[in-house]
Image (cartoon, rainbow, N blue to C red; front, top):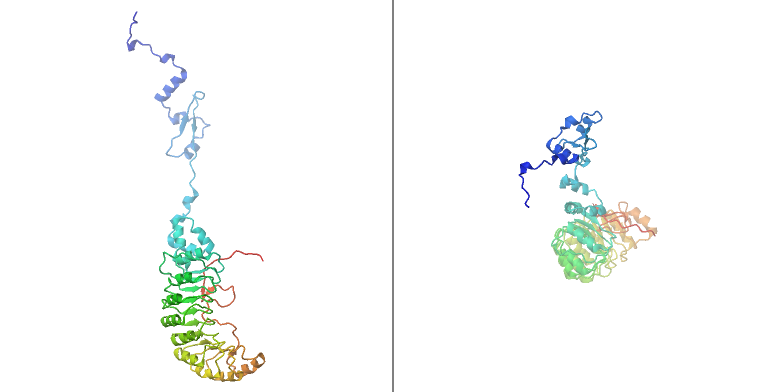
Length: 417
């Protein structure tokens, strides 16, 4: 009933009944054939294989049932070295060299490289690259103006543009020293915000803008102001004008022509103008500028070289005696001062330093050769427009601002007419 148990030693070996492929696997595990003993076939390119095979990897011997006698070897070509390993990477360049490269880029390309990475963004807005910028004819100026002022621009030119409301909340003091905002469309509040953050101004043009007393108070915080162009401005009182002139003691060129001045404004100018002024334009004050004002003006500014009092109809030839007290007077403009008789112009032969005389509207063209012969050392009616405190002189293609060439300039897209 019960089968007899057998010991393990008595069990027959099953190796004799295994298939042939199983025996080959056991032989392969127990006995490894050396690579040199099995690669003796002359058809196997041993030298080529060994030279191409990477040293860290041993050749793999493939052996199967169909090629038991002649094994073959699989070899992998080594990867070629990347060419970039021999070229200097942009990341390895120092900041100084990248700044030198960025210095040669125009404004549009400089803004493009600022989007590459954080490092390039930091370098692209370095203060050294944004020294002088021209944003003339730039539409939607508020974002660009915020970016430029934040970058630390020193010379900014953006006349005849529409300034919105730039964001300057995180900036207490601007680095700008030369700024041209002539004929811009800007609100008084925005102008107060911009000028209120300027403490290093040397040259400023606000021609044609509506100002306020607060703007002039902010201008008084710039003791280094040298050139100020306020031609055609309005919106401020005579008191604030006098206070501004009293604090700007280093003014050299001042243009206050054709402002909406009353008699009090003219008195505030002549009584508070600093002694340092050498070029002055007070043209356009027909009934408000008197000979007595000229006397006070000459006494306060004895170093004037260029004086423009055009369109002051109350001036007569009696004012010439005061002009004689200006030993350095080089150019004088009395155009359309109709109370001056043309014959009295000959008296300017006693002005040895005078080189240019503008008397448009007083002298007829037929009498011009006679006066030129009587005053051979003076050029008569040679300058049609004044250049006093003007930021840009010459053609429209000139993009300089008080002699400073703008390195970065916005180019408006071409529009066919």
